[in-house]
Length: 279
Length: 197
Image (cartoon, rainbow over the protein chains, first blue to last red):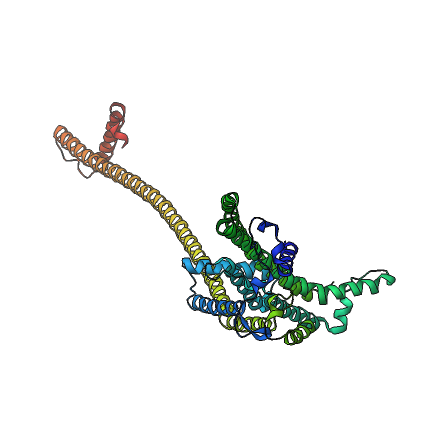
């Protein structure tokens, strides 16, 4: 999906007027692309405060406010609101932490897992919240920042537990034929130090980027067909495009929740691997 | 990250029209966004680590303690109830034993009383019979003495009248009287059984 989106984005960026949808009109349909994600609010260039940065800060403020409010009012016998809050917390605590990392080590990593899950899920759902309607994680800087944190954490944990050289040695599974060891070592080194963090960031980014692009395509395409096209057929067909945007919105919600879960799950898996004695 | 810095330099070269970031490859991290992301994560992590996770974990600890405390309390109550029941049943058994013992005692006592009364009654009856018999024998002896004296007197009187002289005190007279009495006795023995008593 992300490949398609990127292809669309790039084609739009390089040659906006050659999109086939614009056949009937003189001015043409400018399909959504990379430029739609660049929305600086304050300043310009590399240090601009973008819409995504603003949303990230907003999400932290909202989360910190709601979470501390909930945490302050916890009682042994839960009410309805606390029951819901506990369900969310337990999803991460028991479903990810305790299941994947295991007792009692998981307690150390709970703040990390809880922070990651709720930060990602809120920023993802921003994509379909009216008015906000922008997925923070479609700007690769944010997934990269989080993946960087995870990268540092799981290597730090492993080195602290095993020591640096034994950690590198443990990358190669025991019992391999001698001539195979260098190749496997190189492969595992690339996996641990490059593939894992990069895929962690790009998976989240790609899903959010592509999903948002599709929503833009359905909505802007429908709008163009309805308002700017001369052919009555296209105006009727715009209904289909708008319907598609509704379906995609529902689908996006699923993807947003799932991606937050996957990011946190992989983090837990990497940490569990770092704590494990064997490869 | 070296990629980002080189691209940052490239963007500054490309001028102030914002052109580079406007249509840069979407997989190039924007430096400000990267930094904002790290800071946002750090702030939220601090809040979660200091406030949220500790209070949730404290809650779970309190809850499990409350549940375990409840179980311990219930177990204690059950143990107490069992003890009370054991005590009750042992007391009941004791009381039953006591009652049985008292009943048995009473029964044996009754038997003894009846036995004693019967023995006493038999003894009294025997005593009464004995006394009656002795009295009767005494009366018979008295009556016989009286009778023999009177018969003797009568016989003497009769004989003196017949003979016309007083024979009283003489050996012959006494002998005669005795013989007479023995004769009488012999005759009386033939006619009545009273003579034996």
